[in-house]
Amino acid sequence: MDGGLRAPELCGGETVTGVAQIKEAVSDPLAEVDFLGRAFQDDPYPVYAKLIKETPFFYSDRYRQYFAFSAEAVRAVMVSKDFTVESPFRASRIMFGPTVVDLDGENHRRLRIALSEAINVGKNQQYREEIILPTIRERVADLKDGEAQNWVSDFCDLVPLQVMSRIIGIPDSDFDFFKRVCAPIISYLDFATPETKAAGIAAMGELVPYLDDLLAGLVEVGSFDSSIIGSYLRQQHENGQPSMVEITRHVSLLIPAAIDTTNRLIANCIWLLCDTPDLQKKLRGDTAAISNFVTEVMRYEPPIHTTLRLAAKATEVLGVPVPAGAAVTVNLAAAARDPALFDGPDNFDSERPPSNRVLSFGAGKHQCVGKNLATIEICDCVEVLLDTFADIAFAPGPKPQITGTAFRSPVVMPIIAHKFPTEETL
Image (cartoon, rainbow, N blue to C red; front, side, top):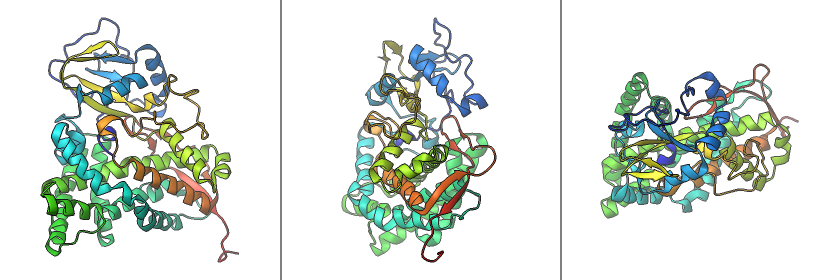
């Protein structure tokens, strides 16, 4: 997933010179909103609904930036050439350096072409058959039958990490190392603090030399296979682009871009299957229904809520003037609950007709390159789980909570599930 889904800064996390002095004549719509408070983290949607209705785009003096909440305002910012992703304050820029998610102009175009060729939607079916489905089945086989188990750590987090490590071209023998260094990098991008930043940078200090050595070894033997690394190296060999440094940066970037949001969406899908158990029988064996279900989860309970843009020049959104350099927090999740786009937006409806108006993967030139591959992986997770387990339910005790601010998913999710009988168990 690209920069549309990689803005882990919490609202108000940046100050742009010249903007902090702007004062609104009206009261600040966010004067009483605590983004880090438990009430908001547990259920931000009433706040979103109020802002969509009353102030869809506005400047907050408290947080010293602009906010887009309605679908109209969100799309206007995301597709406009007047806004840019280029900011030295973005956590992704700090962690990886300039990459496709943090650049605009010719460098973005060049790197996006290279990334699109490396991921290559034409290889999705090959990835599915050779990597995605076998990996999911491995992880499902490890889930306990009839015993409580934390499916967040034991399934949701492991599947995308292992799938992407294999698609990237990381040898299975190095998976434990890859898993270990990924954790602090993802933690920093999820929640930027001095402590998580230091740990993330230390992990990058291990990952970058590892990738440099891996790339150098493959170049030496001329091994350009069908993996993402192989595709990048083939491009570099044939065209001299991207540079080896850029390849290392973008392989590193795929850790959070293709892993962190995917694991959260898998968790949110499982949470909704448990919360509405009648859906399990309804979806089982129906690939089209599962696809609709996943699309509705993306709309109703997306894994990432906000992303950041900067005004590249003085402009306006919905008639509100925006000065050059101003920061804008764009709320993708609020846009997906906008009644102007969806009937009954606060209702989960697995039969809701699919719509390209869902903005969970972003919009415009920074829309997620890997959205099709991620969707295949998530749908396959749901399908294999429903084919394996006769019932999937929350373990006794308090119901797990979907929670978070910029990123939302269950932190821990104890599940009890019973497998269908097999010939070996009969």
